[in-house]
Image 1 (cartoon, rainbow, N blue to C red):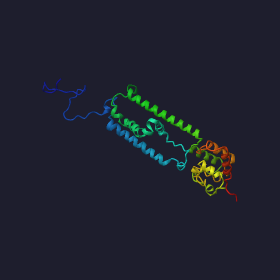
Image 2 (image 1 turned 30 degrees about the vertical axis):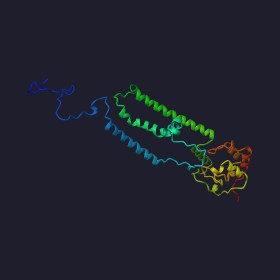
Image 3 (image 1 turned 90 degrees about the vertical axis):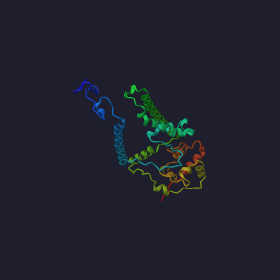
Length: 292
């Protein structure tokens, strides 16, 4: 079909619109002109994602400044009963590093190699998966990898938490945050002010009673001085002082604590004999504040 005065003129049409193709650079239509088609990843989609990420980040920073995380007890390197635990969103990595093929002599692979492959694949996914299909059941490889990753993260998180609970039961340890909540609840029920985390003046002023007693050698044998210090003043509130412990606990309660452990304190029933535990409990029961 020709237009104009020349019957042999060559006419080029664009699609079915019967519009002549003009000369020069032709600006392609926007993606909105094609229903059902997605926009370009770079820069359209990526720019929107960055803007959303910035808004979320600013909101998160405002939240953390308005509601700061509570501080726990001061770190104590001498506390051998402490069980370290990361935040919940790192539990799967924490459990992953417990396996022998990513720890010990393979620790570099577990801490650098595998995470680099995982996060690198996630960053390169838009460039490697360039298929036009967006229905997950039509993308078996990408969908299988996604479901496998989600199942692995959930499984490792659950296993890590269960192992942590088993460790608490084996060592008879009460987590720090639970101990703080119990003390705050007891203080509220008794009408007292809750502890703020500092040492009390009473524990600092109480002196050690009968420091030359043979039970002191038993305390050194049980490595009590390693946590509670040589003068048994401890490091309150993480490690309570044994000076003045007779005002807080009876001889039977002290003996039970030494035997079975309590909180972060391990049990000594396998290290000390019953006679040694009883002798140590009798001596600790004498540790009381002087009466005026």
